[in-house]
Length: 297
Image 1 (spheres, rainbow, N blue to C red):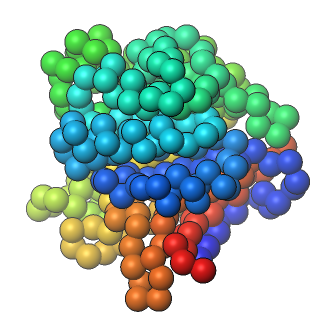
Image 2: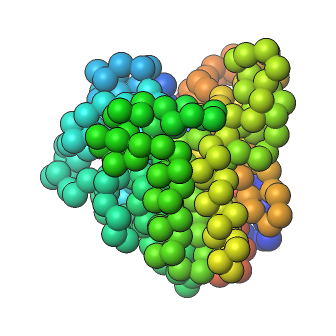
């Protein structure tokens, strides 16, 4: 099953292929390791919320992710607020413990499997030098900095203004083409409960996107840099009211993707399907496709 939305053709041979795995919430297993691994993506990006809100469940998912072979970046979600060293160690269980990318300011090319957040990851994609900028980890969205004590201790971030300043610093270090990675998406894409990052869990809704990320995107554009896309999750595509959010939206030449189809493993009576989003980058274009891998032939 496929639902493809193209920005340009995206069909030129030699495309850079990035797999976007939405919020897991414990829905990741050995079948995913086998199926996703067989697709031979150039890079995988996990949007976060690995477990179900406990350290043990997030760590169990990290151990399974660590069984992948090939580069992957994992953004810690709001369900993954724990000792960052322990989570990083589990992700690198089969690869050796690498430097924790989430607390470095330096540009880092994606290695095997590593955490990201407040980090810059340059990639070579179909002849293009593209900067992946990983935004604020552990975001719950809304107008306040969540897990403030933890964020101050782990990342040196005490306020949303601090977070915005850190992200703008990464933009200064980045190249001319940028893709932002987040757990939550940016503020500014709608206040309705079924908007891309609109609030569906309280009366009156409201825009629940990250204001620091939105300000950083605007800053990058003001600096003359091209923001190609924002890849995130967090706000589940099926709302609490039973409506469906858009998984893809293009605004002012920026493509926004919300990959949080929860649960990402589901039964449609004929088969069991496993969801992710594929991004193909060519020399001139990008194409996005929702992919539903069948578990049984």
